[in-house]
Length: 319
Image 1 (cartoon, helix red, strand yellow):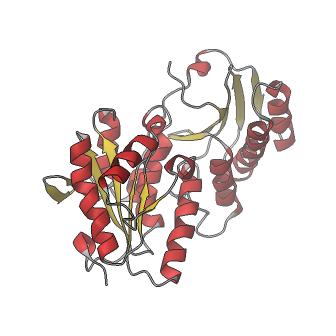
Image 2 (cartoon, helix red, strand yellow; image 1 turned 135 degrees about the vertical axis):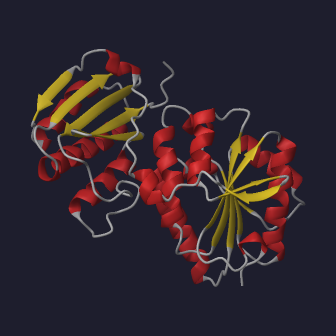
Image 3 (cartoon, rainbow, N blue to C red; image 1 turned 90 degrees about the vertical axis):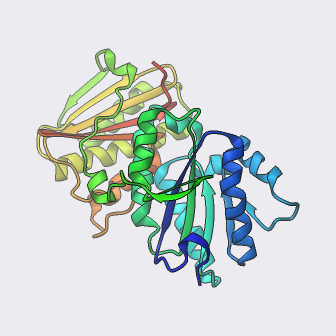
C-alpha cells in the first residue's frame, strides 16, 4: 500500500520542488525521506555534493536513507533513465509497494544542454509510470534561469513547497511537449563556417571525417563514441529521412560538434532517443544509442528539415 501524498495513486507520482533557500528545501525533503523510512519504503537521495550534504546533515544518524552519487547517475539523460529503471525494477522485485526518491539534475544541466534535460523531465512521466514511484525533483530558484523554471512547471504534474503542494497548471503531457518544435541554443562554434561539409555522405565517409579532425584533442573514448553516434545519425537520415542529407562539422579546443540534417520530419516517436523505439525499429534504436554516446544531443524539427546536433567533449559552452 502506498503512503503519503501518493496514497491511492497508480504509477509515477512526479513532483517539482522549486526552493528559494536551503531551509525551504530541508522543510520539504526531510519529512518526505523520514516518512518513507518509517513506512518501510526504499528511500533514496540522488543530489549533488552540496545539497546532498545538507540533507545528510539534517537527517538523524543511521536514518536508513540510501544516498546515490547523483553526479554519476545524471551523466546523460538516456543513461539516467536506463539506470533508474533498473534500480526501480530491483526494488519492485524485492516487494516494494512504493519507492521514494529526491533528485536533481547537475547544475551544469541548467545551461546550454538544458534542452535534452527538459526532454528527460518530460519523458520520465511515461518511462517510470509502470513503477510505484514517488519522486521529487529539486530546483534551486536562486541559480535556475527563468526559462528553465518554466519548463520545470511544464514537465512536472505537481509542485511542492514548504507551504504545501498543488497541481502544476502549466503541465503538458509528454507526447505533446516532446513533439514541440523548439530550437536549441546554437553552439558558438557554429558562428564560423564548418571545417567539413558533406552532402549525402555514406556512414563510412562521415566516420572518416570525424577521425580526420580528432587529432588527439579529445579523449579517445569520446571520439570513438562520436564516431558511433555519427554513423547511426547518418544511417538513419539516409534510410528514414528525405534527401539531401547534410553533414557539417565544427572543431573547438574542447569539443567537436556535428550536425546531421535531412528534409524529413524526424522520428514519429516523441520519446525517440530517450527510450528505445516502442516498436523495436532500428531507427529508434540508433537514436537511443546516439543519446548514450554523446555528451549532448540536440534535435530540431523545422517545417522542411530535421536536424540532429551531436557534441563530443565539453558541451557547456558559455559564449
